[in-house]
Image 1 (cartoon, rainbow, N blue to C red):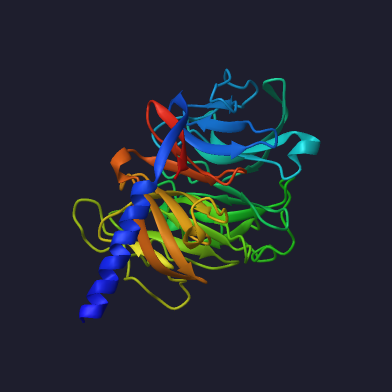
Image 2 (image 1 turned 60 degrees about the horizontal axis):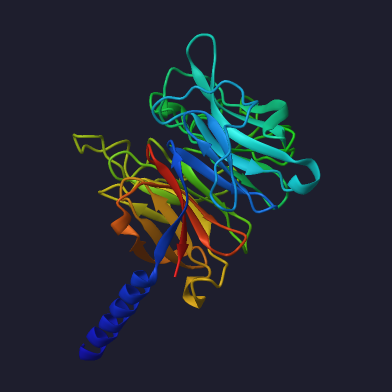
Length: 365
């Protein structure tokens, strides 16, 4: 027992010392509720602001004027301009993709994904390539994360829009889903429900509440996602073809305020369980990034970083294959909502803080 206690104390001291060596540098500031960060091959960055602005960030942190050419954005509460992602062939075609809440004439909105060519501070040849169905009267649970699969297909995460949670496990709509499309917006023939009568053929997985983090595993190529639960019940999942993740029938979450049970329990046949869940207190997980860089030491390589909104911390999850073996909370002294997490081409980790005076931070040691 004494040896075990000594070993645990040594591990705690080592982890504490490591956390104390981490610090952040401000790369850019003055952003209004920034949501997503992306790196361009020339060293510049793209950053979205939820109210509906897209900006370029120079290497020295200078912000451009808002880029012209965006379609109308329904910006309210949790919805607005969300993810931005360069085309894998950006150097050749200068194309970028973005997700946003698209309004209609009846004051409803729905998640949409568009693409356009970035040229001289504006977007040309703008085309909406995918729209969530149905549109709803809600400003919550928009989802909106984007990730390129290794095969060049685009994954899009959606939310249940809060008021429509019962639609999440049903395949006749794209609320509470992960969908998969071609870069053009076409539907891949090998999607799991592409030939299922009555199903939306772009669906990849279903039964999600509000997926706010998405990252491709650097070894397996699988899509890992985090989603917000209600009162507790946040989840880390691997989004697998055709899988059902249970919401709102199967969940670790509870009804807000009351603390009463939602649905039928925490497991059921045919429902894929989460790799990790946070209960009874939510952390509100957001951006995800796998660490492959040697910048933070060998023990960090292969870790998964999770930004959080409610917990106001950066979580480092250690992994053994598809099993979470540990969790470390970092940067709690910042006292800020961490919306996006990216490993940059220089190997450093970059964070986006969700605030009225939001920042882009670089985490160094």
